[in-house]
Image (cartoon, rainbow, N blue to C red; front, side):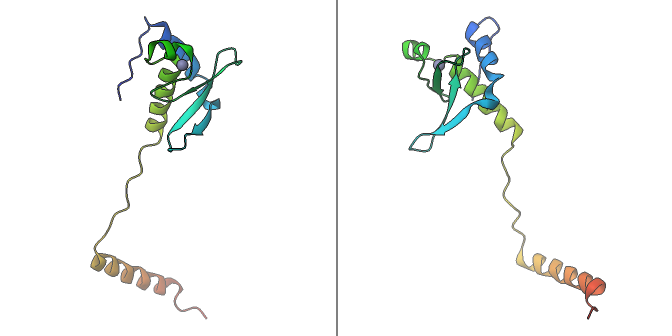
Length: 117
Ligand SMILES: [Zn+2]
């Protein structure tokens, strides 16, 4: 995803201001499993529900384009993804290799602990 933030665009600057409070956003899920955030207005009196595509605010309603809330959510999601790299699947070693390594391990453990009681 490409996120364009321009210091010449007041929406970008407002999005960055909103992003500073992203750690307190409440997260919700739609019935089809998509997540969205409840983003409070700067006064805290109005809540806008926004995801990376759409928002309930009037700016979005009017323009049908990324408002400051959508921009802020995009930045927030991108930051989360950068902080939590996708987990990689575990190795799937060949059974013979695992068996040989396991025998080695068992022999090692027997040497250390095998003679007790
Ligand atoms: Zn909005």
